[in-house]
Image (cartoon, rainbow, N blue to C red; front, side, top):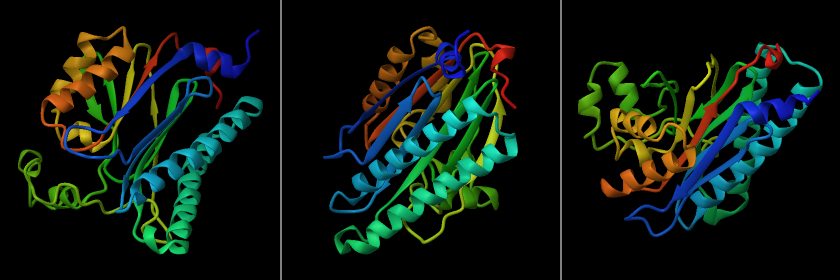
Length: 266
């Protein structure tokens, strides 16, 4: 009988890519994923003198290591849903501390930070952690739905009724984040769980995609290339660049297949 991680590999397919975009000279985004373990991490760095690149790389490398350990632990001895949510949140807090201390130790990296989105697949559920304005979407039955809520100044103003979603698209403060790893000693990360179904697609992306491409266009692109996630990733990046490519663009796409009761681990 195949082990749990083999079953995860059969059930989840993951593709991802990152691109500098048209206008930026270097790429401060960083991504990582492990199909066998069913995990993915995306980070969008900020800070001058390449500090954003350092922050995003640190976040992904630390979180990938911690989440792989968590996935291995889960495969040996099932962990409760509440414990998994706490663990996802704690891994983000740990990486925040590491990045913050690295910035404090190097004056040229002062103020460096990064957004982050993490995804951990366990059976029919996806455990999500995030801080900042990078996003995770669920695509199901030709409909796309944003699962994460942006930690940004413009989202706060939308919540308070100062902007509509449409007006916010053109707001000059659209890229001001209210939470990020490495900026402060502590960060509050959101952690949540969603249930998955066969043929779902999970999209994780930086704002270099969503600032350039409307949600309906993202859904249409996924639908047009539904059976080829590698091609879908490429097409989404091309679309963002064709619409101006003002920022770095990162995309991870997860495809769910053959969900099975044997994968229920909680």
